[in-house]
Length: 105
Image 1: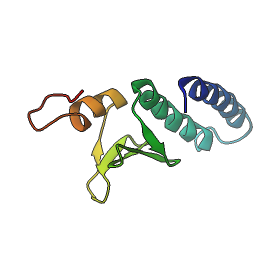
Image 2: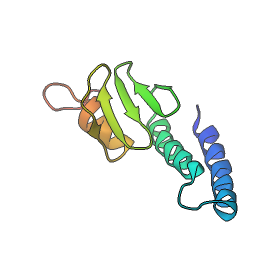
Image 3: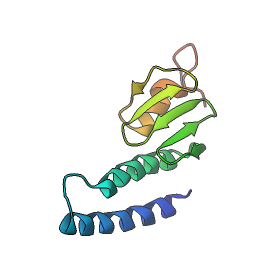
Image 4: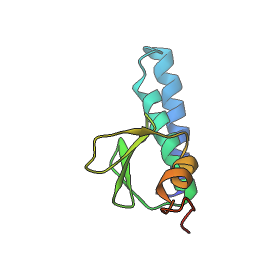
């Protein structure tokens, strides 16, 4: 997925979100949740990290499961979830570090 495709999707979702809020319930809006997911997905696309998109979550480096809406991540097969602030923070502070605390490039 490219950055342009994500931006086009966000524009479309914002329009649908406004229409949904006018017609239906502004508090329980499924389109708003999708906007949150796509916004987080856009952060990962901007970072240029290859990932596998599975709808509500992505898999990074065939090892890390990252939820897009709740901003949580875990190692695949483990049960402990960790929070992250944004995609860049997750990558630099946790996933791309080696055992000495420096970033692998």
